[in-house]
View 1 (cartoon, rainbow, N blue to C red):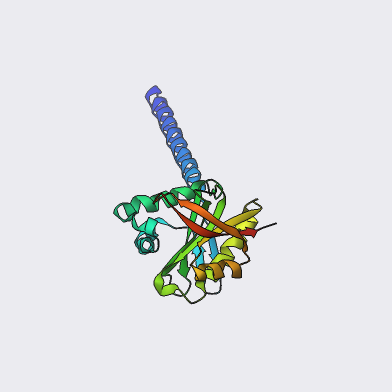
View 2 (view 1 turned 90 degrees about the vertical axis):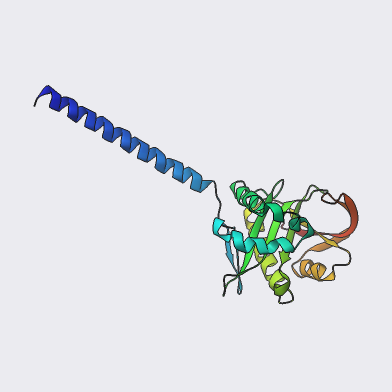
Length: 208
C-alpha cells in the first residue's frame, strides 16, 4: 500500500469517527430534550386528561373564553400556550403551575382543563378546573377532578391541596364537596389580575 493510500484510509477513519461521534451526541441531545417534557395521560370512563401537545393549540384557544383572566391572553394566545407547555419541564404545582387538557374520549374534542398551581394570595397549592359552556351539567367536572386529584396524590408528597370558590358559585362548590374537599372557612382574597378583593369559600382536600 502506498503512503497516499494509507493517508487516505487514515483520513477516512477519522471522518467516520467524527461523524459517528456527532450522531451519538445528536442522539444524546434528543434524549435529553425528550426527558425535559413529562407526559401525563389519564383515562376515565368518558374522558382523557393529558398534557397538551403542540398540535393542540387550535383546540386550546377555545378555552380562552372560560375565564376573565384567560380572555385577556387572546392577543398573545400562542405565547400563553407555550408557557403552559414549558411548565411540563418542572411539573411544579407548589410554586409553579401545571395545566392539563380535558378531552372527550369518544370524539377527541377538548371540553376544558384541570390545573394545580400556587395560589397568588394564599401561597398554597390550589386545584382548579374549567369547562366549556357546552360541556357543563353532564358530570364531566367531577369525573375529571377525581382522576386528577388521585394522580396528584400518587405523584406528589403534599399533605393537601386547596380549592377556592366564589361564595355565589354553588355549582363549583358542589363539585369540590362531591370530590371530598372539606370546607374550612370563608376568606377575602386578592385577585391579582384586577387588584380587587372578593369573598371566597376556602376548601382543603387532604391526601394524608
